[in-house]
Image (tube, rainbow, N blue to C red; front, side, top):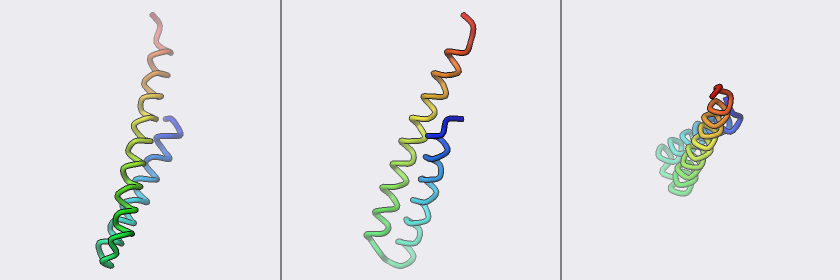
Length: 62
């Protein structure tokens, strides 16, 4: 598993916590930060998935 996938998942989780905390406290700024961080984490996770797929494809014999 690529390190970008791991970091992306962690970032998504951190963003989810911020988003939930923002909702609970009524802090729109914190909620927006959480949503942005979740989105960035998803992108990073997807990029790591692409790297994994390329690496796996390169390992397969032709």
